[in-house]
Image (cartoon, rainbow, N blue to C red; front, side):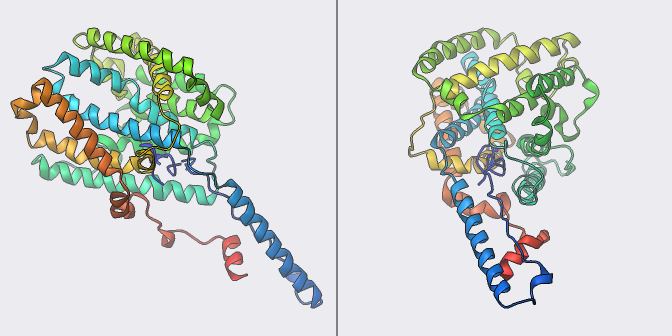
Length: 408
C-alpha cells in the first residue's frame, strides 16, 4: 500500500509498511530514567546517572541508525510497475466488450496485480505489533487517508455522476478505497497470524468459506477483505531468500512461457468467464454460480495468481532505475488516478470511436501509464502529503519515555 505499496507498504509499511502502499519498521525509542529516591543522596550519583542516560541515549540512537536500512530498489520497482498495471487495467475495462484482446489482457493483469501488491504489503507488515508508534502510523497512514478519500470519492460521484443522493458511508467503501480498509484490518490481525501454526492454510480456508457465504454483505467490503487475506498472510510468511528464489535466471526464463500461456488461456476464457471472479468481492451465489464453485474458483485462482505473481517478481529489476524513486509514491498514484478513471466513464470519454480502435487502445494504455507515473512523483507527493501522510501529533498523547528524553 512513506506511502509505498499501493501498497502502501510503509505505514502502510501505502501503500505504504510493517507500517505503501506499505511498513517501514520504526526503530524503538527507549530511554532510562534515574530513580527519584537517589536524586538527592550525593552529587556524584546524579552526574553518574546523567552520564548513564547519555550513554543509553547514544546506544539507542546507534541501534536506531543500524536498523534504518536503505530502501530496497526491487520492492520499489515492483510497486511502481504494479501500479502502472493497475492504471492500465482500469483503462482497458470499458474496451472489453468490443475487443477480445483487451479482455484477455484485462483478465491476465487482474489475476496478479492486486495479489502482488497485497503480498508486498504483508511482507512489510511482518514487524507490526501493537506498539504505540506503529499504531499511530497505522491510523495516520491508513485509517485517516481512508476516511478522507472515501468522502472525496463520494463527493466526486455526487458531482461528476450527477447523483446528489449518493450517501457517504465509511462502512461501505466505494471504488479504490476498499484496499485501505482491508489493509487496516489485515495489519491489525498481524500479531494473530504470527502465532498460529499454519497461517496460510487457515487464511485460505477463511477465503474459501467467504466465497460460499452470500450473507456476508457489502459492509466494510468484507468479502474482499477475507478473499484477498491469504495473499497478505503469505507476505507475512515470506523471507528475503524467497524473493531471491524467484529472481534467479531459470525463474526468469520460465516466466516467459508461463505468461504467454496465461494470455492464451485468458483469450479463450474471455467470452466464457465472468471477470467478476477476479474482483473477489462476491460469493459464488451472487455470481449466479453453484455454491461449490466458490471453493473451486477460490483455490484455482489462488494458485494461478501465485504463479503469475512469481513470474512478475522474476522480471522485476533489482537495481536502482529512473522509476525506483516512484515506488515510494504508489499509494498517491493509486488513489488519485481513480478520479480520472471514474471520470472518464461519468463524462463518456469512451464514446469516442477512436478509443475502440487498436491504435486508440495502445494510445490509451500509454496515457494511463504516463498519468499514474506523474501522480507518483515527488511534487505530487508533497502536494497531497497532508492527506496521505498527516503527522497529527496533536491527536496523540505523548508517552512518558518520550517526554523524559526531551526533558533530558
